[in-house]
Length: 408
Ligand code: FAD
Ligand code: UDP
Image (cartoon, rainbow, N blue to C red; front, side):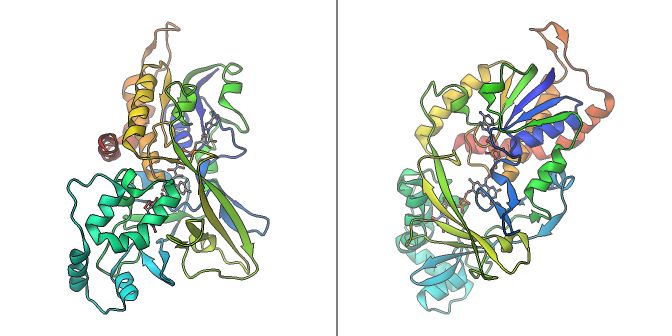
């Protein structure tokens, strides 16, 4: 019998499986319906020998030393700062909007101070700032909003920014300096040998068994286990009893071209023309040298794998009902982007899983299992010390983050 069945081998499932096995001495069966580990962060060498991300570009960035340190046990890193261009009015301009974006778009030669004044003159203050339109228009005005945000957002979410939570476009800052990096986090790097290699190292433990191409429902009754940790869509788990939680999906069109370079930066966003939102050229991300180059186009769509929870008041309300049901369901825990219906990045999911492990350590690992009527687990001193070490300060960040998203 396995102590834990973990459903989903993405960041959430793999981190918790690793912690349970290595730090708490538990036996874990990790299952995924896909044919590989890594969840949406899965990467692989394509038929041309180029390392690509099957489910779109995954760039690692975090401000959490603890998350970075934790993952560093399983990979070396390649320093990488992500840069994006937006195709606007026939030019490829730095995104997020910065001083150079403004000067090139309007043919001006402003300094930072003048650019700040310029944006101030365009901005249309809105109180309160509730929607994704409010966020942008109140920062930079309607014209820039329409050039850079409105149509991209409509394509990506099939919804006007005025119908979407402010948190969505608030992910993208606006700058009046010349910093053209997409992220400003303290730690920005890519796993040196790819995400999949990192996951392999994470899961390489005798107490972890992995079962791929396995649907949870199909194996649920075949395999004896103590507790369940579920990282798939929460609505699916409960047979959509309160209705389907809306997710946005994508179609990925991968191509390999017979030339060394395709575009001038890792990602080019297409806010206006074309049905796709962005094109990524993987060699920028991975640093790989190759005479050919592989790219991916992202076409947003309604049907397909659930990639993005859709941040909207009414969706949070439906999720809240599932969350209450989840809390009432004994011996099952829900973590990860889909199981907690949160638009989380990889580092946030890692932090969430580590925080959950800490709570498990504090509340659940040492307990009498009333159903079975025996002491299910006792941790030795070393495991307890390890639990403590892992979870020291990180979790205040995550708790704050979770509270914030809950409130949003
Ligand atoms: P997932 O990675 O989705 O893993 C869940 C796993 O559970 C899946 O493998 C699924 O097959 C499995 N599963 C579900 N239900 C079942 C079932 N019933 N039975 C068996 N298996 C099941 N984050 C960043 O930090 N940086 C980025 O640049 C970035 N780019 C992104 C780009 C795209 C296009 C997308 C969609 C996401 C991006 N993210 C990025 C977010 C990142 O993918 C997630 O934060 C992370 O993958 C979430 O991990 P997870 O384990 O919660 O979920
Ligand atoms: N966005 C936009 N134009 C851009 C980039 C982003 O309108 O050029 C909006 C869009 O709504 C997008 C959101 O900002 O969904 C968040 O962008 P991010 O790059 O963080 O999206 P992700 O990488 O999560 O798909």
